[in-house]
Image (cartoon, rainbow, N blue to C red; front, side):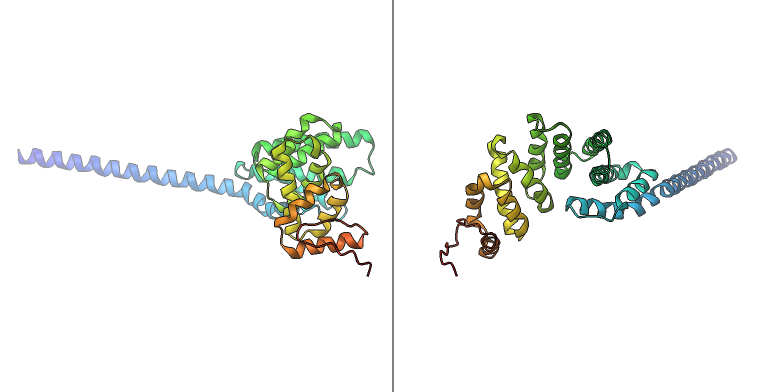
Length: 268
């Protein structure tokens, strides 16, 4: 009886040891598989990571409407398209590619035929739409979609919704505002009331953020028909930027009333 018990115990221990070895082997293979997949992903993703930093920088410069050396955008765009992109980075890649495609087209507009320009704009529009699918809350992409559609087809009431989306997604983004405020003021009269309020507030924020030269160009350009509302919105802006705006306007021979600043009628 005791011998039978010992044999049974030894058999159970053997099965337990066998199961333990099997689990260890399974765990080892699992770890090797994960390591292999990680190495495979890294080999394809690392070049993308290396490329994303300059891509982000270029996207930021495009948003700020900065200028680039001739051919720089096209070269970066070719490098971006040549890299296999993992799904994790797809939204950033899509955004960078869309903005660079649009800028590349804009920079070659004077050298290309109307047919080439339209084809380029159509391609840029498709890239922006794809980028918006991955980045639906990007206010600058919505603004660029509005700009491209207006450039391609002229003024169309249906395109106003893209401008509205831009304000809804990012009403207080400084670099977006510098590009968006003039475009919005150009169609100010047909914008819905809440969007008009956002446009006026955006102009005030532009002045309050010390973008005085940009505010002056906007006010004396497309914003001039709406100057009373624009200038009235400066009531809550700090005195220093209002004085700076007043000085620029005065130097240009333009006299306006800005809340909180007395009009000096003296000619000297």
